[in-house]
Image 1: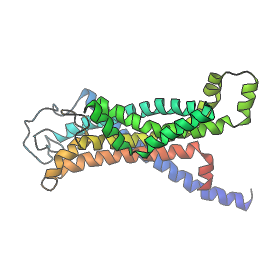
Image 2 (image 1 turned 180 degrees about the vertical axis):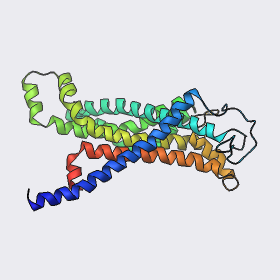
Image 3 (image 1 turned 90 degrees about the vertical axis):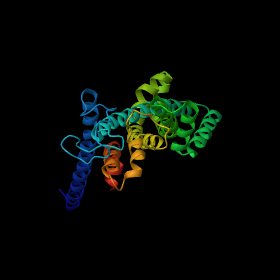
Image 4 (image 1 turned 120 degrees about the vertical axis):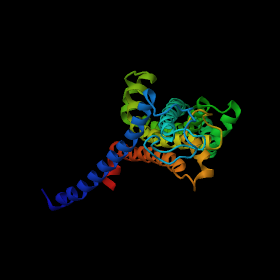
Length: 286
């Protein structure tokens, strides 16, 4: 083994170890939120609507994180908020994936004028901030958890569509696609056997990042009163309710804020690890 090869191994080993640690930290952070959400399906410390606790009580043996300004148990609200955050993230990502991949593939396979028209439409949608577009859709449909999921998914689908179009066109330019066409493979067969398997690693990383963006968007909508209405305990709504008492009862704002940061940061760590796995060139260039 040459000295250069040994040096490359010595340099790459710490980097692989660092990426592995990042991926594990992300999995732990997200895992904690997932456990809270699953447990909340079967058990919570108090009924979400129970206001028998003292107003703005501090953390204690009965109320682990204290109570909010209405006397509700804050730990219960955080657990239910975890379930809402994961529901919104998964639902919005699923909608954006279905719409975005479908539109992107149509643009990649279409003739030039159709491709140009779709691309122009996507550019217009992407020019609008995701939160602003989601606010417009929610305002038209009414505030609800379903409207928040649908609006965020639609708003993010344009970004997924443009990415899908770009990577799909790269795949379609390869020689094995020409060989598949020559052999008589149908367009659907080309999409299923060649295009989707090759674009999925790149698209999946983008969807992982969009999960965190969807959670932040829903929290922002709830903070503005356009998200899941009461008694749904969205973290964004908890932050909005606690802003007036942040100095006298800081746990009411810190708890949902920390939970939100844990989930988003954990998902971003996982997405970064997936990016390294999906793109060997990027790993070597680091």
